[in-house]
Length: 117
Length: 114
Image (cartoon, rainbow over all chains, first blue to last red; front, side, top):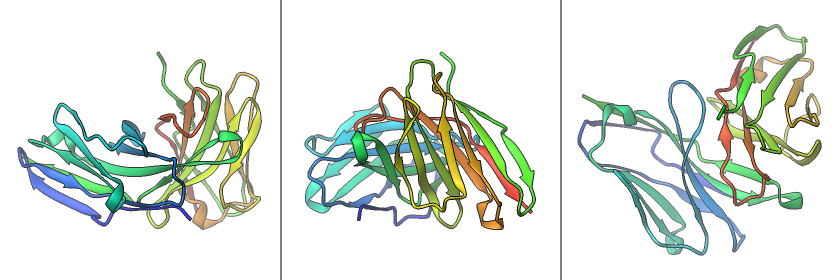
């Protein structure tokens, strides 16, 4: 069975600190996708990044960066110079190919990130 | 471009009642999926529809059902409500629903069962 584990339930840091959110996944599939979503207090999940299983290149987008390592089944997310607006719950997810190619995301339990001024 | 719209945003029901939640996807999106979010179980997949056909279903009892209309709008229904059905129900849409794609989520419908 596919599983996503986010061991950090809550993280609290002071503004401008760097913070890394951990994500470990389990899957038997050789082809899969990994995602990070952000959930602000309003409730909707906001897509941040998608990475397929064949692309292990790290990615940087502004203050955000992602480190994908198949050898350790990890897909970690780092925020550099954190800001109060980064406060949210962050979810890591794994995409499982269902019947007829339908998408079903398996989510981790989420990490609540609080950035204090 | 309008996002995913879910109605109602909040509702309160009592045990034994039924509820219908609505989701309007982003224009042009043909896949709609539903997720239940609770503090204990987290985010769990309910089902996914594409072109009015249910393509995938999560591990939920038959009390949970859904449908999709020809305009891609979707509804989900929960019958004989139980206290444990209290949750945030999130709808997401995408172009094709294939497992490579990102999902666009609505703000959810928060259901409280008393």
